[in-house]
Figure 1 (cartoon, helix red, strand yellow):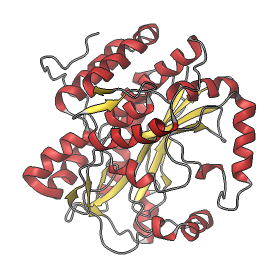
Figure 2 (cartoon, helix red, strand yellow; figure 1 turned 30 degrees about the vertical axis):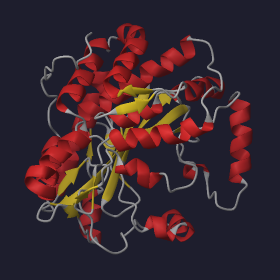
Figure 3 (cartoon, one colour; figure 1 turned 180 degrees about the vertical axis):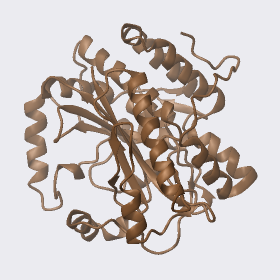
Figure 4 (cartoon, one colour; figure 1 turned 60 degrees about the vertical axis):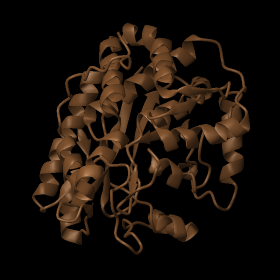
Length: 374
């Protein structure tokens, strides 16, 4: 199964650690950055940009694309005296309304939800999984529902907001919950059911287009893919690839096994992502569909064992096991940010994020009793 990865970045003023204020010329210069087969495209805020890999078949191919683009972006913003950071929320933001990017669609959204749009300082990691048809996509969506909170916890990288610790591992997830149609997608019967229900939503006056449907996984309207949106943007490129490989293996499991029933209670579907965003990997997770509260480490082990046959078939077992080992031992982005914030404040977090933008994959950190084994 082929896949693609979209990453969102903030452009940071290294002197303050806050999102940069860009004039028109500097912003246009930054938007010219290309690398790894990816171009720079505007995002919601003027201090944000997004890139997308070409269609990828392997983890090394995706990693080369991401690192090539990140290097080009870092060099482009450095020429402006700025830095780029893959932070899902900046550690600090200025007061007042955030300047949004030019464009009629951005203005329409701002006018629809002005109070929310004013502070939309959030960046995500989106993974596209190629599907042969929409019925297959619905099978994947239905299966992913039980694992999306676990992936939110693993990928949490946004504990800070306005210079303070929010108490949440993924504050991005909490802020995003305020927008239209958030959280786990509903269970669908098939592709026809998905399209019919999508059509009813798009007939509502609030729904400017299908891109406002912000479920943590959805069928793409532009590509023949399932688009997973449950993840914070990641500090390092290898972490982004790790999640893409995990999701590809989960999609293979969805298509390999029987269709899953609609057996997740609505109240559990609502609270499980909140719980995951609150605690990340530092406590427990709500296991779905049972609702049992299980140590996060145990859920991660179960995830790895579930997808191991598909990882072995694709040749990704060693890389994924090593990546999960590192996250459990060294901590995800949220845990690492908190450690830096405690000793050096927001400046230390911003500086670290700038270094991690193009950092090489770290050596595995051993930790007794925490590492999944290949």
